[in-house]
Amino acid sequence: MADFGADTETFRTDVREWLAANFPASLRGMTPAGEGPEATSPDREAWRIAMGSKGWGTPTWPKAYGGGGLSRAEAKVLAEEMAAAGAYNPIGGMGVIMFGPTLLEYGNEAQKQRHIPPIVRGELRWCQGFSEPGAGSDLASLQTRAEDRGDHYLVNGQKIWTSGAQYADWCFCLVRTDTSKKHEGISFLLIDMKGGGVEPRPIRLINDTAPFCETFFTDVKVPKENLMGPLNGGWTIAKRLLQHERQGISGANGGPGPGAVPGPPLKDLAKAYVGVEADGRLADPDLRRRLTDHLMEERAFQLTGRRAADENRSNSGPNAASSILKNVGSKVRQEKAELSVEVLGNNGVGWDGPGFSDDETGTIKAMLRTKSGTIAGGSWEVQLNIISKRILGLPEATQKG
Image (cartoon, rainbow, N blue to C red; front, side, top):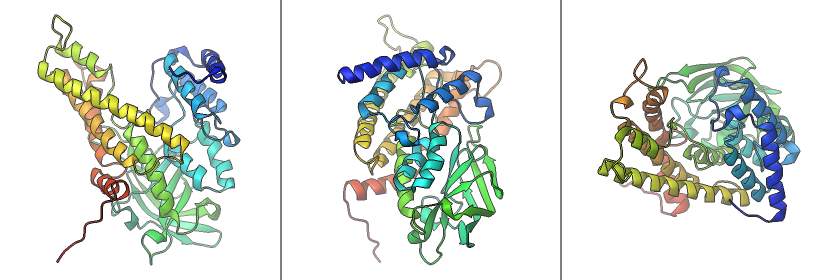
């Protein structure tokens, strides 16, 4: 536990007292719920309202917009005391991880006053309208059009892989406003998902979930005040937002990342399913070695993520190093899921029905979900290009012939 001096220790006492009075005991040790109406309960809702009203779901965001306004030291104390109480942060999603920090940096005052407080309180969901069927890794090839119609833009086009679009209230969206230029012809629009003309169609994945959607925009009217940043200046904003996204996907912010394995810690799972020797060591020496290697790598990644988070708060947020965290985090998560399935043996290949627990069937589905981690938010190869150019300073390859 960190020691930050008398003033911060007084804050620690206040946090403990507040948590004791406001955190429902029934939620102790639980994780944030998923998306959709089935993911709520009275206690979860009460906890969201309490944290949102306090601003502690976004502890270092400005108090002027409803955030906690805490210092780095105070935010660390809050995280420590929540962990000790078994409390999770109920304020999350793309609004917190990706859009909110970008809005604070690039939005105008009216946009901040309108959109930040509901994000802080966890009242609205946001989704991301970036990728298109013909614009994935080459995102700047996007073709969704926003035509200037005087007092509004008229948006037509299609997005894909829009996470949670079927539940979202708003979408931060890249649109083409100039067809004569590629990167310099893209703008950043805020689109009301309930305003008419927006149709999300869920995509069923191999793990039998539908977190992503195809999203169709047909003659969607978007008020001019929903343009964030300058006209045709959306690419700069998008690049900044993608740094936040990559760090969020990596799990370096403390979140589980996509494809988190349910159930007990991996080492406990291995002891329960594989067995132990008389001295308490895992019975399978090869698995023991590989499991030890994984746990060391996972711990090193967690510590690196904490250091990066501290540096982000003291500077101007994530940078190109988020590409390293994204690649490493996705690989660590894939390895953990694959080891978990191996540990379960025959119990790790069940899909549903009698004979398999929810954690067992959840593990194989989580393993399949982790496969997307090296693609989502910019593929493994895209991140390597960013690392080589922005961090290592290597020259771009030139084509001969």
